[in-house]
Length: 584
Image (tube, rainbow, N blue to C red; front, side):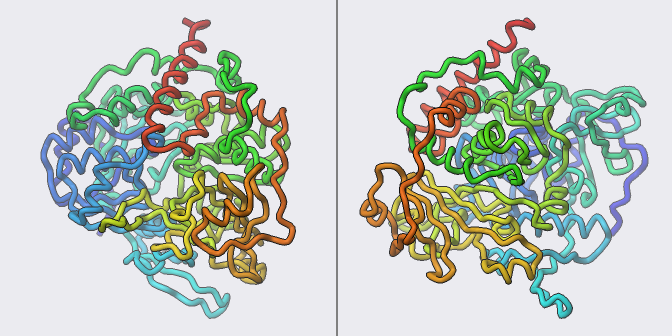
């Protein structure tokens, strides 16, 4: 089957573009998180009442929610689905929990290699097996392969094409070349494996204009099927450099009882959101200067202590990666870089913004700040090929719903006492990086017997390559398995074959830790109380890096989270307004 397209894409209308999506298609969606999602195009597809779509993508998120509400989806193949800071994706959860729609969880590397194989016209490609994860057995595209020469057990992943890719981008020129700006997600990769690539853009510009962009990436016109101009086509999500994500509007949408179809009707992008995308980097990096914090003198909280303890683990030689939904990790990395580890490297937005500066955390401004300060912009596939698979990354602290005595994690689903199960977001890329990264670091904001169990129900990710000998055989750096909670910090002990407590939180007794853990707790002979938080560390965290308190979102109940998130978003809007005043 050929994926060759015409040299000149058709320039058409939004409705005509959507009409190219037929019922029964295998469909992928471009963009990432709340960035460059083709909302307008998906809305048009939903209004056409297509059915039987086979959703094949790295993430679900808002696009999948829209398609599920429209009853357009027949099957789901993804790595992860959530609504980011807004929590679990309700329609995705309902569809999977009721077992009405078949669902396959994919390791991220398997998805990447399957698309790459299709682009290269190969039946399969090799990859490192996600050893330790149940996905190694349950993902149907994976076949074990033992290499005699290296004595390594690998996987072969079958090539996968997609019928249609829906993509939103800042600009295209009159010939059909499409511009990406900032993190690429998997867009370049999926373009190469798609039979049709349907693109909406903010603006169609004269030929020669795109060549003047200093920080853009061009998808050549012979990779594109058709293009439609759709200003505000990603709103309420972002499309830099035209507008940032409107978190206030997204909060209204996620809390509304109205259908997404009505909540996501076309509307003008607010001027404030457009102006926010134009703020210069220096203003973004020091945006804390326009804020006043209320908790300057209050004692350090569990969120503060855990964040700073993670930051202390990083050094000038660290290369850290922030995952899909990791406020604590994102804040901790910035604290480290702004203090004792200025030479460390870290990436955000699924590896798309590389070697960024620290700066102040903000919901509205974070993507623009990281995009402007990054040394380079890449895609998720580049992150795997050039950093993850080679073992270059030292740290990526990830959250989990369950973890057991051996350090195996579960972010897939948990059984309910009343019967049935709760579907969780998924593992994203955890199944791969548990072995690839030097250190496998996990955090749990709430230490309970239900979260720390003897054995996880399903193992979404876990490190099987533990010993120095095993890790060096596969080309990885020796490192630790670490779990940090609001009560203590564990490290994996090879002799004991389980996690052992190495540090206790200030004021937390061993008895409390034992009572709140669902497996037999062992304490290291060298176990000690965590070093107290220093005043300068707390001041940096609260006053400069995270004055809005975004890190706290993971430490509150679902009910409290709504109130806290509303407060953060309101403060975030005030921050943007204050920064814009001098230029207004």
